[in-house]
Image 1 (tube, rainbow, N blue to C red):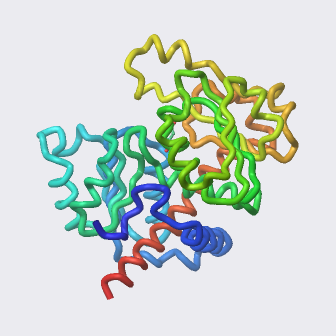
Image 2: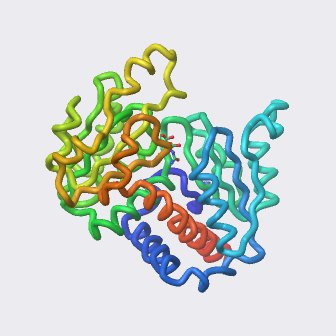
Amino acid sequence: MTANHFLASLDFSPEEYSTVFSLASRIIDSPMDYADRCSGRLMATLFYEPSTRTRLSFEAAMLRLGGVVISVASAKSSSVSKGESLGDTIRTVGGYADLIVLRHPNEGAAVLAGEYSPVPVINGGDGAREHPTQTLTDLFTIHRFKGRFDGLTVAFCGDLRYGRTVHSLVKALARYSNVRFILISPPELRLPERIKREVKEINPAVTLKETTQMENGLKSADVLYMTRIQKERFFNEEDYIKLRDTYILTPDKLNTASAEMIVMHPLPRVTEIDYAVDVDSRAVYFEQARFGMFARMALILHLLRRKEDEDA
Ligand code: NCD
């Protein structure tokens, strides 16, 4: 496997994230300076699970860099429906494109794709496992609003069991100093033990506090990271319905939080954030989605440059 893929949030060191954030901020300040940086380059997006932001922000990112995009938006419309293996698809598409973004329902699909691909593979989400470009987006958003990662208290709320964005972000954040995590979830949807162990291995000094009460997390958090209950990963509808409305952030609840706290969400939102919260200046989730496009522009440039250096 070449080191040129981006398959998991820990594939980048904190320094490498910083490099990408500096580039993303420069792109925000002078987008036209980057308008043809990818001319003659082609990116393929292979999405075997639904997506709005990840796929469209990647495609918008490549087009804004002057590159072009080819796309498969569902397994049904591709040869996967004829029984083609992921390895064969990736080998084929790797002959057409300079970069592949893959979203797949199977955990481990991204790693497998990385083994077959001659070009950089970006994991756009593999089952409940990882979503590193959401982490890139999330860290960039925190960097833009808070200017630091050290010393932050981050409350994660909702489906911490199946939420891949949480799994990727919590590990990446654990590498900074004096970070505290408040994990708010129903008992059924707690952060998996495996990930808690990894976090402790990454940084034994990290504080992890688990609670079922959203209110407990709001008082001291610098960042509240809300998540959707991941309906598609549940084995039955009944369990989903029982847990669906466990946490709903309302303006009243938000009133108990600090004036400096930011509310993030990878989106899509269902019921977990009342629409009335959107007008609160602490609600940054749509800015977060927009930052995701700039972060992905920077990521594309970074990976293509790294590949060129490697090939040189
Ligand atoms: C997330 C995902 O796909 O994991 N969405 C996204 O990429 N922004 C979160 C979710 O679907 O709840």
